[in-house]
Length: 300
Image 1 (cartoon, rainbow, N blue to C red):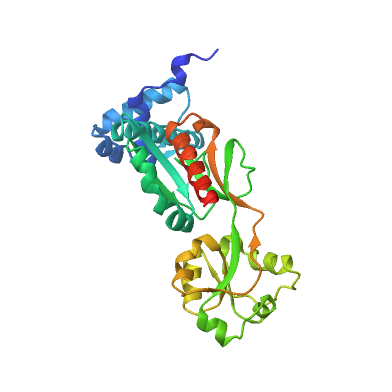
Image 2 (cartoon, rainbow, N blue to C red; image 1 turned 90 degrees about the vertical axis):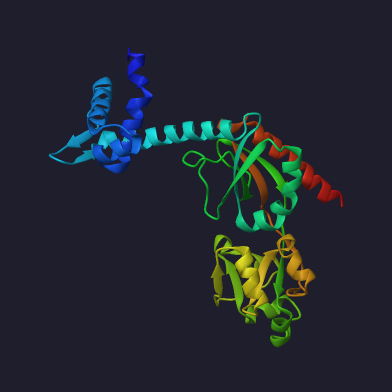
């Protein structure tokens, strides 16, 4: 049976090890954590003795992590970051909490931000920290309490709550529509099309859903919807965009809908909360508030 003390090294040992592992130097680690080089060396030596494993290769004036040390350093860094985050949460809001929320940039800007003041008014004790993400997020390696995700609801080891669907519309600048004599869906096979990188097949799927053979030519690609919308406003091509995200441009007549059917996506927006945060109060309050906002809009 393993001695439980071996599994719980002192915080001073772990802090010294983490600093040395990140800096690659006992001297740099000593400066960072305000100890002498000898004290850092002793803490790490004690840690190695406790674990019974060599964590560093030691040369004359340099050190490097062993393979075991490299693996251990990654895990310890995650653990220390979790402790720091918990402390920050308590300090920032003793009666509330911190909510680290990952959001898609355009959804966050166009849908969430205009509504968020009501959430903050209802829960002033919660500190919200946003992480904008276009790439897939990972709850295991990133300090995220919850995320608003577009896609299906099959996120593993997490609760996925459906929020809303999405209807996509084909839009372009009024001058672009006139220049290319666009009046129906088929006309779009002959004009420049703007694509979103994360939805590279959107145009192909859209044409197929309407029974039209997709064009073989490729157009420009953009990382975010807002950039694609602005490119379309500038007359660079037709864009296939979620209708609720371009309401401002449509109201200002900077973009116009092309007279084509509105196609509803098979996917939707979901609030995803990992199992380890199943009882995280700020995430649960956000879930309740989001569902309320969606219900209000559905009834309007």
